[in-house]
Length: 89
Length: 525
Image (cartoon, rainbow over all chains, first blue to last red):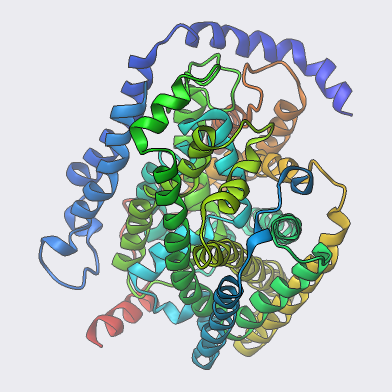
């Protein structure tokens, strides 16, 4: 079964994915860092500025900044983001 | 596999080490069983009576995600590939946990469901629910057996007792089975909290002593970078054409976007804790707290593996690194604590998987089938009784079946491969189900079934991707494929009625009157 699948689909799949590999191979460390750090930055911005404050904090037990999940998002994401900023390349 | 790789780390166990391990095991059993007195209904058993605070959810999510074999295998990957192995706890957790917290969990939680298949049943139809439940129900059972067997083999090789692995399998199964039977999710989560503390203390001791022996971080880094073939050991992301399992494209897209989010938002063992939250705020906060704690996990499991490069003679296989470090550098007392940490990692994974498998089999596979045939829901006490029967049945089946895995050396890889087979398609229909109201039941069925077929093909054709272990690429492309199929088929078939989608799609106002009353009553307490 495995051999049949491999012989039948190897050609078409290679024709699709090998050109993609050739396009992506030359990108360097600056690109890795841009995408990795960017993923964290976009997520932080989405929670902090795009989602409604009421939606993010629905059912919060108390008012006040310590119970604001937007701040929690920032605090939990920044260490990860810093790590990729330093070690991504 | 491990028995050939791991040297005897426990040969120097002292009485104090054995006492620490014994106290830990008895304490866990007592604590877990204590929570049995709070279980009065199916809701108490499966979702802890919706009473869990954010800190317990966060700690439980983290510890459930880490098994004893991860301590060995992840450290081994750190030894072999460097800090790139840490991606699974960094970019493979945090963006995904934020997506899970703010896109998926509020909708599961508001729908008042016990399981993800149950949500898919409400959003799409019973067929999607049953297919999803069957996939996860079988996978979790298999995982339970694999987890028990691999860890028992590991314990056989690192503990200084001449007993067969099956003895450890039964011991662990009885201990985790008893408190999961009595206490349900509350027992699982509260023992997880203690287990996380034990893991952090035991793992922390190994971390600090490893760094001390290596002369500190800078000296360790300098020593490793001076060795041949280890110049990339302090790079998190590697080129796209890197033959390692960690090329940057696979890590950012396959892991960061698809596998991690699919895992955090689609794995019953993770999500079940948030469904037991006392409020929606606690459910979201629990995931964010877990994401914060995840930052520290690579320090506990990767750094000892790296330190082994600097401190110990070269090893053929990186999986020897942590057992060797335990044997060489931990003093009496701390060695017992480290073994308690390994037990904690194991027990937390076993109890979570057992409770989640039970929930899916009871509420989805039995409950939904009963509902379809009898046209009414099964009684509450029947579900609770069945949940407890399934707990005993599944841990027994897993413990007995575990022995059959002896000699199946590719089993762990098979399980990982199986998971990547359905992770992309399942995530695609979950994502579209919540974000796009035009996604309908026909689109979801086509996306799920064709997506799994496509992944099976990708997995079986060699030479398509450059990586030696291309499961990250497979996850990404199967996700893209299922997404496209679901969109196309949904457009070609009639849309779902608005009434059916109310409260289940992002951006719509929750209008479930019953749930609103429950929320109102809770806020007034």
